Structures are given as structure tokens and as C-alpha cells.
Image: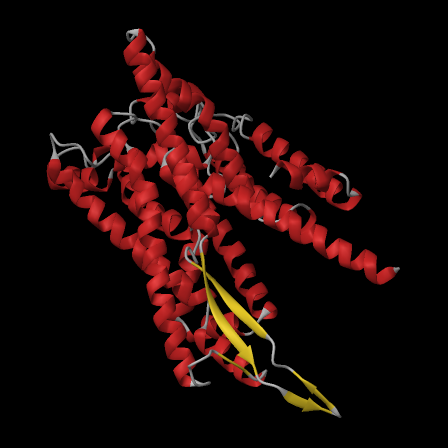
Length: 438
């Protein structure tokens, strides 16, 4: 990792991209501290403090880097974009026109991306309007009138749209993975305060022996989770491919052996983000509307709250854990089906004279790829679930309530590894260009 960064800084073009990415992230963090004009931030911070038992709000706060509880202009952050992406990917399967766009290659993906942008702005507008009206009447807006409501709505919507733009600029002019990097820096900004909370809860005030034991356990859990994420991210299943020999002019070419590397965790962190987002939406709506504090609604919301899972004093709430696991596995298969098409791969192999040893080209190859893919996607989904549940287990059993957890660690480690791979690939491309220009 350090060697890659050292080599990257030696190359002028990549050094510029790293510097541009750094400046954009500085802008993101500065914007997270800028208050929305005309609002009472003390009111909102007090309201947020009263909702600390709500796991969805902690999850939302982690994704926004604390800008939500500070009610800054970036309070909504990139969460509308994440929600829009979920909606568009679900609609891609349901609507034939969108599915056709997705298969049209780069042009089709650009059209889908454009629709996602408009949907993001629409969702941000709806969410900011709901927050301005709902909280404004309770004391968020210092002087409740139409002009101030419009100001709050415009500020929040513009902040979310601006962050989406920043993410896209990092992708185009920076090191890539723009939206993911913005999300990662938001989560990282919360880690120091969360580690401080863990220290104050389990280490500070304890005897030396208990304090050291607690610190060792906390460090061990974090290290084990990070190692599992790295192993899961790098694990691949290589499908051997043999290319038949053929005549080109007077020469016999082909006959090379290659492979198709299928990642065990083919969907990356997407299944966890999608599942967590869907689980948090009902809790967010209930928190904003001030409902669900008693009765059946409270029980259902309690099941969706990760803070209540593995709590042996109230085992009924752990039922939500089953739904969470099912959603992760579902989205692992769903996202893989969108990004990897066995029929297309089998057809391309057949056109190029390639085949999997022991498997006939065409439909048998497609069936074989589907079978292998089904196995490794399940293994990857189970691995993701284990990584995510380790911090949730310690949270439920020991009350280690922090905003970051397995989801955050997966995102941080996954984005760092993917970004380093992007940098390495850019270095390789540059070396090839340098070689060809000589």
C-alpha cells in the first residue's frame, strides 16, 4: 500500500489527481460545518441527542460524517444519491426500456446515470421539504415563514447535488470511485469520536487489568474485521479458458490458456449498503414523523434497529436480524446478475474460439458459469454477513454503541483497496503509453 502511494507521488499526472482528490475532500469536510441559514442548530442537535437509541439515525449520521446532526448545508449528503441508485437498479430489472439501456453499453449507462442524477435532486428536494416543514414548526426554523422554508430547502438540496457533482469530478479528474471516496471520508471523520466513546465506556474508570483486557478485545475485533474484509475482497475463483488454434494467413495462431477471474465478493459492499438503507428508511420516517413510540409499530421498528439485535433481554427484536441477512444475500445475487452476464461472456468466448476445458461452448458454458457464480456469490454473501455481524454482536451483548460498525469498516477497507487498484492501473497505463511513445 505505502509502496504504491510512494510510486504514485513520483508521477506528475497521478500526483495532480491525488492533490485534486484531496482538495475536493477538504471542501466536503468544510461544507459539513457550514450551517444552513436561518435555523436553530441547538434545537436539532438536542432532538438528535434524544434519538440516540435509533440505530437508523446513527447509521445516517455516520454516512453523512456528522453533517446531519450539525444540520449543515450537507445534512442530506450523498444519501439521496445512494437511494436513487438503489431505485434505478431495481427499476432496471422491472422496466424493459431501462434494461435495454443498460445493455447498450457506455451510452446506455450514461443515460441511466443522467436519470439517476435527476432522481437524486428530486429525492433531495422532497426530503429537505419534509424536514423543513416537519421540524420548522417545532422550532428548527427561527422565524417560520415561506421565505425561510425555501431557503432551507434550497440549501439542503443544493448541498446534496453539489456533493454528487464533487463525487463525479473525483471520478473523472481524481483517482476514481468518487462517490465511494466521499462516503469513506464521511465515515472516517466519525471514527475518532467513536473510538473515544469506546474508551470512555469500557476502558476509562476500570481497573488496570479490566481496562487492558477491554482495550485488547476492542482492537482484536477491529483487526479481525479488517483482515476478513481484505481476504473477502481479494478472494477469487479462476475459471480456466483454452483458446483453439486457428489459421491466420499462413500462420497457426491461438492455443493460449487463460482464465476468467470471478471475485467471491462480486457485489462488493453494495449488498450491505442497500440492505442497511432499506432497513433504516422506516425508522427514519418514524423518527421524523414522531410516531412508533408505542404498540405494534414500536415493536416492528425495534426489530429493524440494529442496536436491539443480540440483546438477550429482548430476544424478539433479533427477528429483524433474519430480514437483514436475507436482504444482504438477495442484493448480492441481484447486483451480481446486473453486473455479470454469463450469456454474454459465453458468447464472447465462443466468438473468440475459447472454451472451458470439459465444457461445450454455448448454453453448456452459460449453465456452468451460472452454477459456479451461484456458489461463489452465496459464499461472498455469507462472508459479508459474518463481517457485518461481528460488531453488531458486540454492540448487542456489551452495549458498544458507536456509529461505525461492520458496514463502515467494509466500506473504508473496500474503498481504500479499490482506489489503490485504480492508482496502480493508471500507473500501468502510463508506463505502456511511455513505452509506445519512445
